[in-house]
Image (cartoon, rainbow, N blue to C red; front, side, top):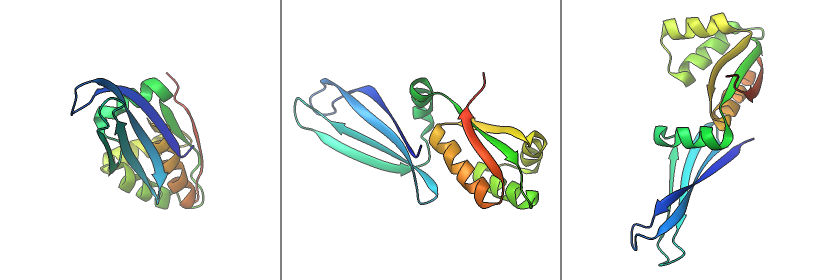
Length: 138
């Protein structure tokens, strides 16, 4: 899946009527793209906003609607160091953090939205690993 969305209640900024806003996450050009779309059925006010990454204030809504997902590294591939360097860069980890990730391989290494995990899977496979995205275990 390279796209997921959630629809939430939202007050129109112009007429203050109760409406809905759609937040979406997609995988595009090697990154997670976030977008919001709003259109008031009462007064016609409308807007769209795009950004990179998952806004933290959206995260709980995406988890509630679509669940938490995890990246499982099944096999680090021929160059585990290259995989770990790439994961460290993407996840923004320090040396201790990536060391903890290395100890989890093979197995689930992190969790987030499905689109985030699909990006990590794509990047892990590009580094030679075998990876899978599955619903997170409680």
